[in-house]
Image (cartoon, rainbow, N blue to C red):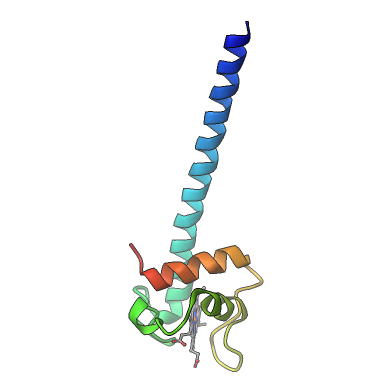
Length: 105
Ligand code: HEC
């Protein structure tokens, strides 16, 4: 019965969409955690500064998202700000750059 087959593919499709949507949400959550835990260990849990400077939107508004991603990926040589390229993708660094510029929700 073709109708049933179509219905099954549709269900499978919806299921897969749901799964990838959940994956994405989880990834955002993980990255936000990384920002507050790992970056926070130097920049302060609320990012208002510690060993490293304040990373709240007002303090970093002179950066655009591209420059900010590069700072995150390559670090700031000669300072305690480490490069994160070994453990994160460019897409993840870009996500964090936007997250910092817009401020945690
Ligand atoms: C080991 C400590 C440490 C960790 C961990 C760390 N940073 Fe930094 N970060 C610093 C220091 C120190 C500076 C200031 C460097 C300087 O003197 O210019 C800095 C500078 C920065 C700057 C530039 C700020 C400005 O106003 O110029 C950004 C952006 C930044 N860090 C983002 C991050 C992000 C995002 C993470 C997590 C992925 C992170 N940092 C993790 C120590 C750290």
